[in-house]
Length: 156
Length: 431
Image (cartoon, rainbow over all chains, first blue to last red; front, side, top):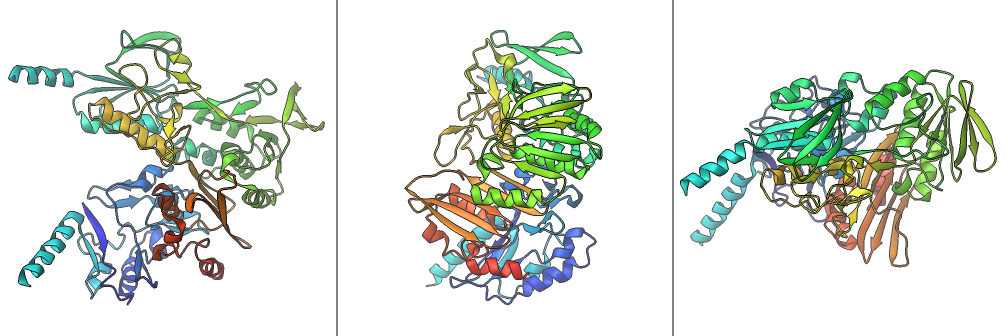
């Protein structure tokens, strides 16, 4: 199952990903696309951090959605039926990443549903020149990173 | 050896799962059961005439904020796709746990439904008191689709309604009725609205925001002592001596679990069904999930009655896993809820009303935002937000994970919450 992985040690808060997300989403006709970017990088004394739907494997937001607006798509992406959202913000209450965008004026909650339309390499990932953001199988990413570390140790 | 495995396999394929109730706990359980056992027989007994719908949305349906198609989310095709035998308008009247049979009734006709594993997910129904007994002509509770349809018929412009109890359902019903142009008066016995969800300050803010609407009035610290039907109208007598005339009354003073049909069985009931961590009741092969049974408080590990949607979904799934032979335990959840009235959001997580000398308050209060975190020994136990609810899930994760507050406020991803970083509160005003 694919998920977003963020490495805050590599990010230098250039915000290229935010720009790319907005640009790509603006081509979509979805209502939620107006509220892009869904990716947001914050600067803090302890390094940057990211607010973005990670498309987790365990989905508290889908379980908590009383309007049955959120659902898991066939390829693991958490999709949203925007017409069904009634703005109770139960999803916001259970999301540990704070990834839900709460739009008070529309009484709706929006999140990254990959409306940019590229499920293989989303624009936010391709625009990242520092290699801080991945969209990959989480287990694979961890394995790759571990192998790299081991190789580095062997070279030493 | 081979023969033995074959026999168990055959036995497994012939299993018959019966689910009583047809709301979210039952639907989640049926979905999971079908995923785990593609060959088993699954029967759902629903006492209503419509297939499963989102029970939380009936007040929104009343207010015209969602359509009928949206409300009835699970069509009969949903059941057919999963090969689930759906029996509508069928009410369970008794269970024989020895013979493994459910006695059901459909339009007065009795029928027997045998089961191998039984899931009780009958939910709860509203309480009526002697001073306002259930009356088909004008006193109603708000719990299912039929209730909302009935209220929709009564709720016309210029009518007047009294809602007894300013709890969650009460306020949402009042909100829906006002949207239909009905003049509503809400009466509450407690000094706060929304029951256990708010403290005095938050309650005051919610009340002020709501009564700004000319059709809505909320009266606290008052109750109904008697009602009387006079002609087409009701006379309502209050505790403080005043009386009033109205067209219909909605009772929302509380709920009771629907356990009548389980009386006389081995299932232990103390107002609600007692289950263990695997959702099993005291009777063998009988499980329970949803509003009908208890659940654990994930932090204190005590048994509580936590009738919220996410708990029902999780309990249904866990019961389904245990019914098909997998051992799974439910860790529980914390009491929480979230709602909006007139673009004012309220989110409450944890034991908001807990008081004592060892409890410390951290509060952020400004014109449009009120947030409060209660700390016990430096660990957050509750969070309440009115106005700005951004990042509530991050605080919930800290409450469940018992993260010390001093550590929590240093984390970068908490800086968007006004109660942690006052600056973000000011910023959200600016935006």
